[in-house]
Length: 338
Image (cartoon, rainbow, N blue to C red; front, side, top):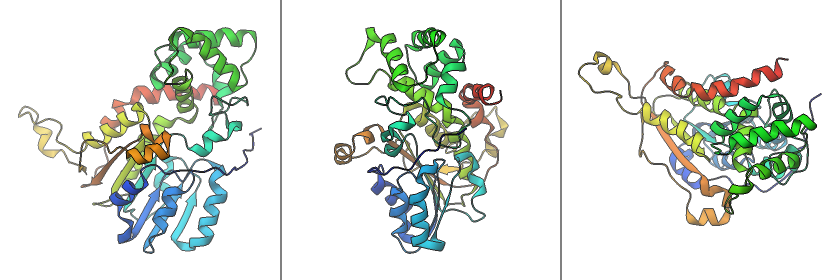
């Protein structure tokens, strides 16, 4: 039986909102897509411009009451769907002028301790963002040591993945690991010799496990591809990332399709290559010092965007580049197909 998660109210700060508004220019009007409704920060800001129409999506059902309020207020100008990024193509037959992503964990999700995203929680292992097939409890108690090591090392970029995964297996052989604080103790014990004052010892492992439970990498990859497909020429994709793995994918997506890959005279297909995006800058945009002071989690944010220049249907090289990450996430199929 699935746990019913009750909606809770928390303050939410949309990251780099003014920068996003400057990029997508809603004052001109048009159709916009907010792929991470969350606390509704981007959506509300876009809807302030009277000539705009907006479609918002989010996989998290707890945001629906706030989304329903906006639907009631703005009627035919706003529509919300509970969907994942990979389902983006299904939302509209019209071409969107700009599509925005604010990746990672929202403050609303983090502050609700019952959902198990926070190290401070003593609740059940969960970490489901919504529309997920299994919980963290399922993963922790059923994956092999090698699988856990791979997830923590690659998705969390955690150097101590080997000892952490070993200690998880040891602990669960005595009794099932069911609560967040139990997992935190295992991680802290594993990293006792390498504790950092700057970062919580559980940070990277929690990131890895959250990504795995929600298949965040696969969703991002197919979300970017689907975004491109529903944009007209001149449309914009803007993405805010919060960790290096996300940014690596977004950076490659824009850079790889914004330049000719090989100018060698020995490769005749070069002239057939299309430049799909125009980039105003290859470097990301960072939050201002003022924003970081007001909203500390924004300090790790990076904003990248691209303007669509041409049509294309082949993204095989993009998928192949990160297939190893998709394969790691697909280990989850054994958990929910039992």
